[in-house]
Image 1 (tube, rainbow, N blue to C red):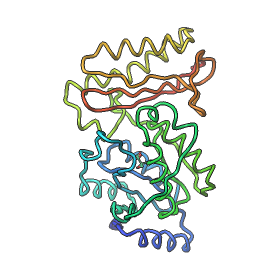
Image 2: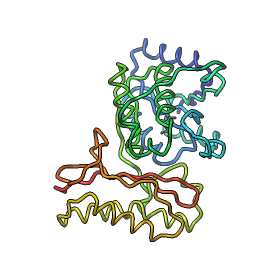
Image 3: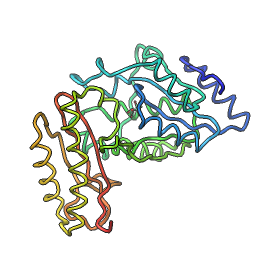
Image 4: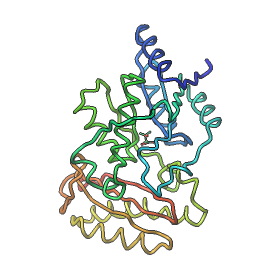
Length: 286
Ligand code: PAF
C-alpha cells in the first residue's frame, strides 16, 4: 500500500491535483472536519469507487461555528485520522492551516437566499455561509471531479448542490446515505461527547423518525401530527431540548402539510449540551 501523502500547503495541493489530471487520473474529494468515524469512512469508500484518486481534507472551519458553539472543543485526533485515511486507501489528506485559508483581511463570503433560511440555518446564523465559503475554497484548491457528502447533513447537501449549479463548478456531487450504529444512532463526531445515558437518550431521534414512517404507513398523512408525535416522544426523554422537527420538501426545504409524496423529516435536538441532527425520507408508498 503506497504511503498516504499529508499536504498542508494550498499550492502543493493544487499542484498535486494538476499533476494527476495531466496523467489522466480522475479525482474524488471528501471534505471533513476530522475525528473520522464510520460515516466518513463510508464517504471515502464511495469516493474511491468513483475516481482514480481520493483526496480528503481535514479542517475545522471557524467560519461555520457561531458564538457559543463548539469550535474550541471540536474533537480532534489527527494521527488516528491519518491512519484511518491510509487504511481506506486515500491518496492525500489535505490539512490546510487557518492562517493560510483565512489570511489577514479575508473578506469574501458566499451566500444563498432561500435554502439556508430553513432547518439548521434558522438557529445557526451564518453557519451555511461559512460552509459554502469553505467548500468553494476547498473545491478551488483541490479541483476535484467528484465530491462526496453525507445525507445526514441533508440541508448542507442541498445547499452545496445548489451552489455548485449556480456558480458553475464542474464537480459532480454525490450524496451518500447516513451511516448508523447497529442501534440506529447516526454516526457523528459529536457522539463522542455523549455520556452513556445521553447516548441511550440520543436513540430517540432515530426511533422517532422510524415511528413517523410507520404512522405514515398507517395512513396518517398530516405532517403536524407526525411532528407532534415525534416531539412528545423525544421530550419524554430527560435532558433533551428540541431545536426543530420539520417535515419538508426535499428540494426546496419548504414545509409540507400533507404527505402525499416523498418528503424529508429532519430534526435537531440537544442531548445535554450536544446538538445532534438526523433525518429520514418519509415515503407514503413505502
Ligand atoms: O460536513 C462537514 O464536516 C463540514 O460542514 C464540511 C463540509 C467539511 C465543511 O467544513
